[in-house]
Amino acid sequence: MTAPTEQTQPVSEQVTPLTDNRAEMTIETADQVLEITGEQRFWTKAQRAAMATIGLKDAPMAEQVAFFHICKSTGLDPFRREIYYIPRKRKVFGQDEIYYTAQTGIDGFRHIGQRSGRFIRRIGPFWTGPETDPAWWIQGEDGINRRRWVEVWLAPGLPAAAMCRIEHYSIAGDPTVSQAVALFSEFAVTKDEWVRGERTGQKVLSGLWPTMGVHMIGKVAEAQAWRVAFPREFVNIYEHAEMEQADAAQTNQVREDSAQRRKAARAQAQPGTVIPGTVVTASTRTAPEESTGQGTPVTGAEAGEPTAGPEDEPPTADELRRELHAYASVMGSTVDKITHRWREATGTSLDEVTGGQLAVLLAELRPYVLAALGSHPEAAEHVEAGGLLIRLDPDTTVWGREDARQG
Image (tube, rainbow, N blue to C red; front, side, top):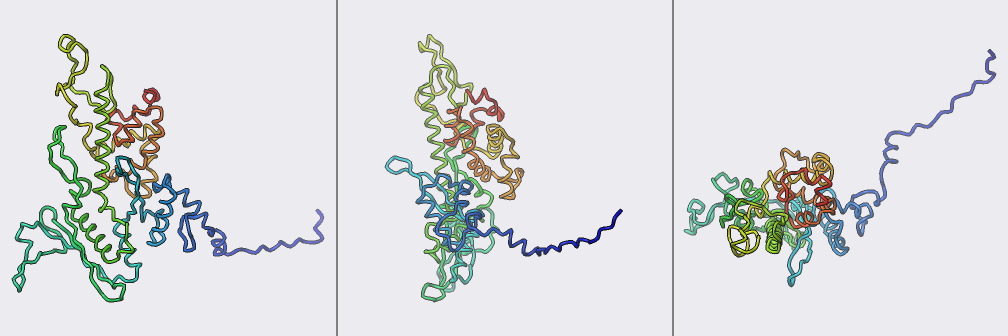
């Protein structure tokens, strides 16, 4: 073997430090990130593409401009779920009109207030009891009765009101205190009470208010105190608890409209026709031909409009869980798959989810379900109006069968 006459020296390569590699990996263009930068004047392409994840896919351009201004002025990031822009419906001259409301949690209020540079400290919230209970009144040395407020609510039942104060500097630079009081009766969300499928005419607390009413009314009082202290910073921005009644009223309106459509459909139905959403009970029977001359269904009322039934009752948490399984069947998937991103974003497992959280989750999935129900218009209309698939058919798997979707 002949030895090489000249040994080739290895070429030394310059090793790039890890810190330099990090700089190379940094995304520097605003079009590639969701962060709202200081020099931005409008949403970037990536941000507009992500609008669908926060419910603003179909928002008009004017509303997108308004929401961008709110996010820039408050410093809250919508893509981190720090602030929301919620569409709602209202009647204007008998026509439905969409309007948008900026909403944030109580932490968002605190962030905006502290960012103003004029905040000193927050005092409260405090709670008090009923007006007629003498235990919640104290007579001062001057002989005047004054309401007693407590820092921690340990009394039985729920409070009558909450109060909060914000110490801050005025625009002139003088220290001042702003105070707000929120009455429980004005903000607590209620629903119709049902007993054995019948409305009792009474109202009961709904959502988180029966179990966390103290916390909820305290948040409302604090949010209002922030708004009194900094009106310019909080104009047209609301805490979630402040808007729950508006959401409940809209849900009830959708439910009533759906019920009216079902009643109208029942009245026009031919004999033997099954109307989606109708609950067939033993009280519904077919009249003999000799008594009416027709084979038309006769209800227990025998005349007039059908009364509201259990299908119009607000859904329970168990029903919402079953509805989630029906949604998964419609989408040809499983509950674990369709809730994967939601569970990662919220850090909530399906075993711990509340009825209110289930309602929000179902609302986010509803557009996909409506698209999948395109070949079954009756069911799609029922879901779009706020109805439950399980009230059309309690079998949560039926909507995954092709023959069922084809009617």
